[in-house]
Image (tube, rainbow, N blue to C red; front, side):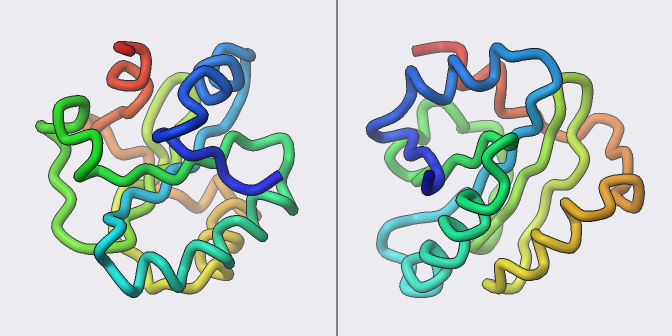
Length: 125
């Protein structure tokens, strides 16, 4: 299954995140960004390879009202969070293999105290 899209799959995202222990990986992007459009295929393949993880594609400009306090400076920005904390939040090179490596060894990810979480914003429909 390709990454869920916040524009069309908000209920499916909410349902997946309600399951205990579900890891959440979001690509924060913008439709006008050519790099994001090129990256999307690889991100979808990554989602297909990790069905146990909730992957979401979020056009932050379409949802600026939900994520107004989120500081996205460049694209693509990846957010990885579990139910407790944000494990990673930052811009990555547009290569799915980078996120794949982060997911392979989550213990290597920093525990970013005070980092933003998307789950609360997603809950406000």
